[in-house]
Image (cartoon, rainbow, N blue to C red; front, side, top):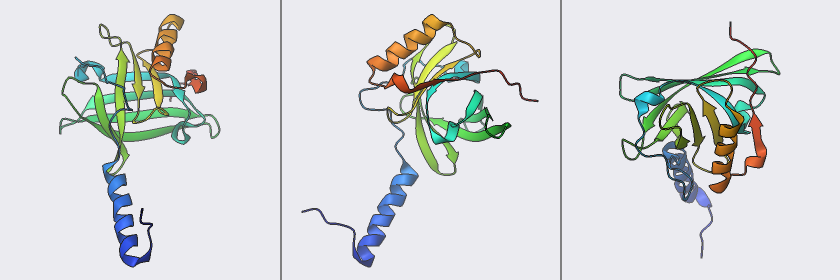
Length: 185
């Protein structure tokens, strides 16, 4: 028989379990998804443009989204995300940090924008020769991004990444294609 939360002692235990779960977070990839191997984090540094994404509250109404990755002194990666909010007509910026998880040569990271809370960032497909485009997911299949080094990606490469994501069980019918027309002043 499952025990429900009730009473002071049980509430404290349940509350502690919830807080511990939030602090530890799930940073692994979705079930049956494997991040790319032979991943070179230094080649991944620099600016990436969001070509398409699945919708989430933290990016709602944003166009011109980019992410800039740079090395941190502690061996991690600084993350600078920016996007133009069409509803407020202002640029939004989010700063975070990422650290490798798993094998050193694997495209798998934990990333945080909010103190001790981490989420997964997993490179699941990549142009391994030039690092010009990437397919990235979070810790479950509701997080998906198509990224490129340029604000536009040739249609055949975008189609390839969409088909790859679909074959991995992502619902690509909800992809939002990101416009890049504003320049930050």
